[in-house]
Every structure is written in structure tokens, then in C-alpha cells.
Length: 165
Image (cartoon, rainbow, N blue to C red; front, side):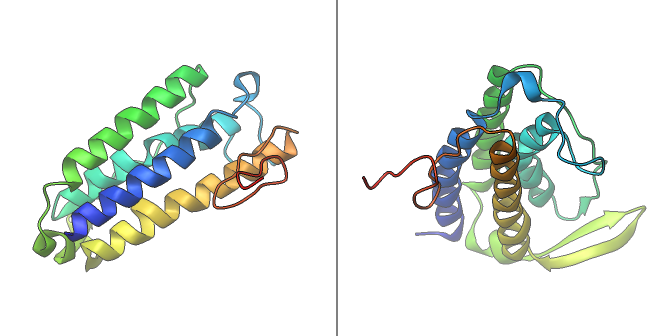
């Protein structure tokens, strides 16, 4: 199986888990934040929903250019879930046709015409496309717990769900 196919397989598996977490985001609390310096619940949820597509768009170009970082807030849970679906589809569309040589080539990011990051593309995909996504999903489950919402099982039982029972 190609490296791209392996990454697509992991993306699909994790997208289903991410959907379960995003489905728990209470629509009346998008503006809530646990502390003044944190993203709001809506901003964090939208960042998670759009991460696969935006990160893969960055990774697809070589060299790539540092994007402007913005925090959008969804207006509904339906918009949030649609953003996830669109993002995952966009990521798969860019990733699936990549050859192993493309996945492992030296990849760079430029800011103001200057190289600010260089690494094998697959290292970036592992660190930001996937691990960064999981990190923020973990943050979101903490937000849900603080709000008294149920937290879905992710890799095993949560305090609210046991898929093995």
C-alpha cells in the first residue's frame, strides 16, 4: 500500500471519530471559552473541522507559502459538520494521487520569500495534518467535559461511553 493510501486510510478512520466529537458541540455555546486566552468552543471546533483540507492544501504545494491564520466561528452544528466533510474530501483529493516520492520529498514553506520551514513532506503530514488535529480534538473533549456534555469514546471507553460493554 502506498504511503498516501496509508495516510488516507488513517484520515478516514480519524474523521469518523472527529465527527462523533463535533456532533457533541452544543450549538448554544459556540462563544464559550474556558479562559480569556483560549479559542472559543466554536472557533476550536471549526479549526478541527477545517484542519485536514487546509493543512493538506498547504502540504500539496512545494514550495508552499505561510497562510494567514484566522479563527472562524460556525453558525450551526450543521455548518460545522459540513465543513468537516468538505475538508476531509479536499484533503483526500489532494493526498490520494501522491506518489511515495512526492510524500517523502523535501518540502518547504516560505514567508516573505524566505524559507522558514523545511522537512520531508511526510514529517509535516504526520506532525500537523494528523497529530495537530488529534491534539485539538483532545482539547475539544476537555471543553465538552467542562460544559457538562457527554464525551464520546475515542480510542477506548470514555466516562460516558463504553463501546466494549
